[in-house]
Image 1 (tube, rainbow, N blue to C red):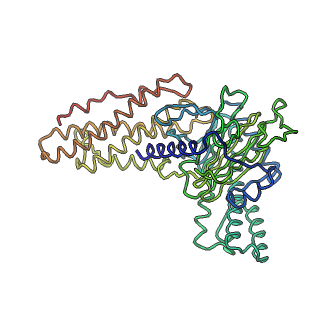
Image 2 (spheres, one colour; image 1 turned 90 degrees about the vertical axis):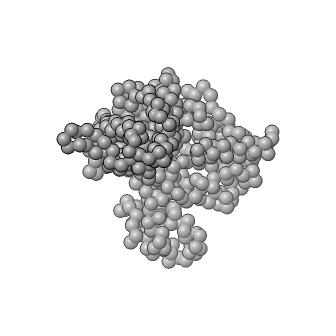
Image 3 (tube, helix red, strand yellow; image 1 turned 180 degrees about the vertical axis):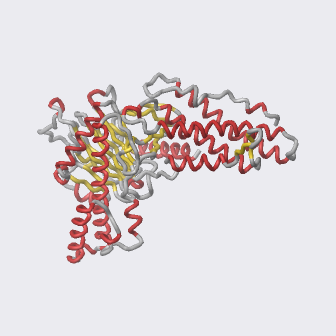
Length: 491
């Protein structure tokens, strides 16, 4: 409900903005424009851009080899996302890599991480090459974490005007050196100029737990959307805010455009606006027609950081060039409801209400209080529609890299089966005469609401799964579309 309201609000804002523009276009600047740096400093100061020569050459090589390895093994997939009740394939192909057991949800699609090498976690990769690719990405993740911390430190100095104090500058240089050498951020390293209350916040807002990798070859795309507000040309990714992130967390993006003689940079480009052969990131102040936008070229190995609340106050898009391009977008995903640890905890909470008779081994519910039944059925829906169906709907894509997810998903399916039994037991209870009429009506009303929603979602997922696409892997024996008999309850 809240998501639908947000989508409607976004559409209204977009419609109003386009109406105000009419046939005209908003101005935008590139680094070739005289006012570009002034505009970036005053209206886009939380965007930090770094050229490729600031990144260690060895890291470039590892990461770029990793990209090519994952593409060679067929690990990139177009996502089938759901927007305003309709399914669309993303023009960009993606794979999620990150902490074991983490997921990331965007546009009603939950992605499951291919786990990168993690101490204490046994991960069986399909090949040593894929292991090396994931290892390269966690090294990039660590590097970008350090760069993000340093950038936020610099922003703090500017905000407090301590930048004029040479002793503070010296301390910043010492801090940066120490941070680079140790590869981590700690209270002791930053205590010289960051308030104590900000230690945990700064670290949390830069500790990336996953990266969403993107790949697209524009010349293989039959159609790309045109950027609607500024006339910036072909878009690989439309204007958006990144979803489901820890509040005010930094997003880091590393870009790699493949060498391609058929899609070289236009060396003599002198027309106003961006060079269409070169990939760019576009930025604008959200729903603002007064401030010019930015289009910043992304050359091989460049990276940029979106600090603090920039992702909330501004929108960004990706403008396609001519050559194939990879990117690694490192995020601090809000995993409060998106980890295996969380969903297993929910299952254990629900199954506390299920008991087994030691003599007959018959199953029964410990409590039929409405609040308890409601909690169990809500968790039941969450397991089925936020996890099981999301996972199997995407088919065998994860098996291209590792079988790591198969065991935990089998465990979740087992929990789901028990919760199916608990639903049947709850329906049996409301038929019994032990309950007062008021209690029965309260329980039935609660169940009716949740089971109607379950039936609606099962119908929706069945329709989605019938689409002829490479993402679908039906699991009739496990997550079946059960024919609901729940509505036969006497109400």
